[in-house]
Image (cartoon, rainbow, N blue to C red; front, top):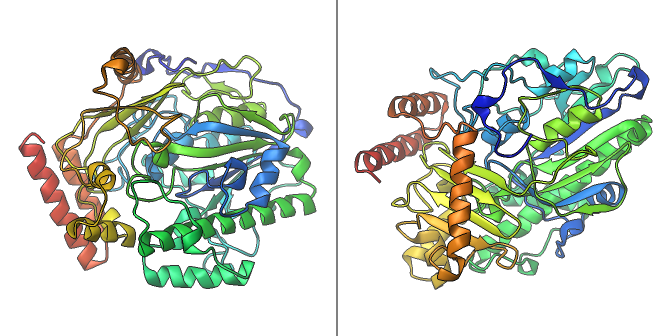
Length: 504
């Protein structure tokens, strides 16, 4: 379907598109690698500081997408969109960690999580680490973790029976499987000196050495401060360990004679968790790696066309010969009839207690961002963000007047521009806002209109009501055991309520 087809105009019925016809013996297994909090810092994507041979081998054996983007740069909206092939803003799953308390979220009629669709087609559905001896953190399995399902994090009500188990080993003989290998990714490094030290020991045990902090390259708006350098080098070691885990899963598939008949899709859920990465709509937050390899997939190909992560659902169903629901907003990227997209869309909404409302549209040249709450700062109060050592250090440097003007402008301005426009191809970190540049006036108007059309046509549900915000905040408070974190969360929520009452 086209990018701007109206959600309200889609027939909510069981009309489906038969993408292919495969016999039971021909049906491929489908395996996803879903990695937390990680940008495209793999050597096949140009990363120079570290090497990632196993992900590189996947790229060499299949298709590497260079312009793949998340429709949401935070876990639960991303995963809610991923597992349905729908924009999270269309199905009401766009606010992070929502629908878990008094306020419940039901999927619209006709929308199903794709594991349920795979099950109906006879597939064995599983979600775990992809290994029989290590968990999602590359730590040995224990009696309490060996049968645990992998990360789901869906914002809507769903039936756990859509997953048969945490591993494909329990399937019937010759039964094809749909497997999600969920990996901890960038979360492995933690958020404190103690967690860095602990992770360093794990890395030294596997690789013999850690990445040197001074060797890393930071975005221009982050100071080369020892705290930030070590965090980034530890993050790169999480990329190395992720690559190692991928290699072990591939070896298992080979050993079990499954690799040749398994479609593998490797991607991350959003960019690096940092001050301008995770949760935000710049490339640091939304640009993700995407690699597809397996039966019928071209080898050694690079595609630079624009793709969205919600396309993964459709292409996976199609590869298995399963009918793709017409309601699905994602597209089969591998179809011979696929028409390349001219624009991509993304959204940031409430993240924890941090109530925000940002939308973006990306074309071949431009990234346009609309801030609906421009009177709120970029680094607004957030118990999650402010719990990280790197953000705490940035705040310290800001208070001491030790940040350069670019860092102050992009990270600590008390307000944000209502509109942002970037030539992201020549401005990869999006540091020069062209929204007020007369030379780009026409481009600004076109992208503003295109975003407005998408919001209207896809039924973007927008911000929560004050009543729902209160319900969601209370649900989070009820589930937070740490007294200090709970108090910070409560205090921040009061700040957002005040801002809303003041029209900010």
